[in-house]
Every structure is written in C-alpha cells, then in structure tokens.
Image (cartoon, rainbow, N blue to C red; front, side, top):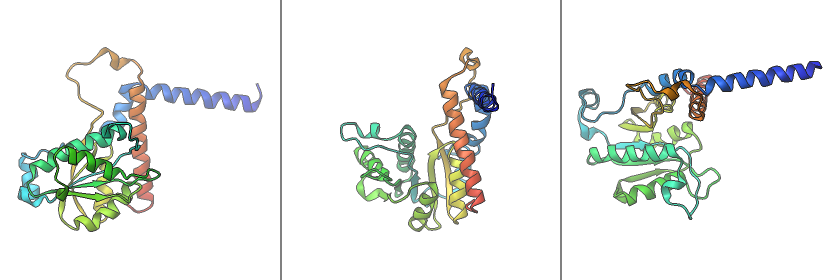
Length: 232
C-alpha cells in the first residue's frame, strides 16, 4: 500500500468505527439526554410555574419556533411540515388554550420557499380553531438567532412560553435570554425516554440512534458557535 492508500484506509476505518458507535442507543442517549432534560417539562398546573409567572394571565405570548417545511400544494399541510415543528405547534396550541387572553406567536421564514413556515403553521392553527386575531407571525428569520432578534420587539420584556424541540431548547433559551428576554422553557418532542423495562433492541444498532447523534452534534456545534460569537 502507498502512504495515501494507508491514510485513506485509516480514515475509512475511523469513520466506520464512529458510525458504528453512534448506531447504539447506549452511546447516543448519553449525548442527547443532557440536552433534552436540561429543562423540565412545562406543567401549567405545577406550583413552580404558577410561582414563576405569579398569575396565569401574565402569559401573553406562546412562542413556537419553526423547524423546516417544504411547500407542496398536493400534500396536507401537516405533511408539508417537518416532524419537529408539527409537534411544537401541537404543544403550542395546547398551551395557548390554557392561557385565556394569550396569543400564539409562530416563527419561521421561508428561505428558498415562497411560503414562510410561520404562515404554514398559521394555516394549521386556524384550521384547529385558533382565531386569526390571536395569531402573530414572524416570517423573516433564517435561523434560531434570527428568530430571537425578530421576536424581541414583538414580546418586549413580557414573560412568554417558548416551545421548541427538547434538544433545541438549551440553545434557544440561551439565545433569547442573551437578548434580555424572559422565556419560560417548554421542551417537547423528546427522543430519549426512560423505559421502565430494558428492551432487547437496546443492544442492537439502529438508524434511529444515528439520527439522535446527528441531533445532539448539531446542537453542541450550534452552542459552541454561538458562544464564540458572543451570542450566549
């Protein structure tokens, strides 16, 4: 073998080894769980939430962050959205209904799509009975940092419920707080669940574990980048 061939062989071997490790849930769960469990589930009836907000009527905004969509008129609206924003939106609507007088702030730009993600979510919300007057759109953002910047003038210093995927909530909370806002975390769509009984498939590789590793690495890199830029 030439030096280049040996180097290539090493790179391929290391890559396969990492991929194999990430295919086991016992490895990826340790990466993703600290992100997903950093903030407790938002419980409206819990004393801690009532104490933090003083009164339920204090919550004027329920903010739902976007997570990707592809406009395709041939598909149902929910099928045009990625799975994460679907779960976020359902939770956002549930919480909104628990706070009379609150408004649903839907965030997400269009990037290269002619229709913004915020508008797609709004269409779903309207079909689920949320009145037009209670929906606010932020449709210019391209990433989470943008969402925080554009949402700030909309909510000011008011405390608000921030709904996003559990793995995404630590980075989102840090970005919003850095700008002086007062978000209350509402993580949803947890990938890691504490099972009461250990299943046999926990000991076998799976593509789901690789996906969880991708989620975790994306968030850790995002937090590192934000810290380098002084955004957290």
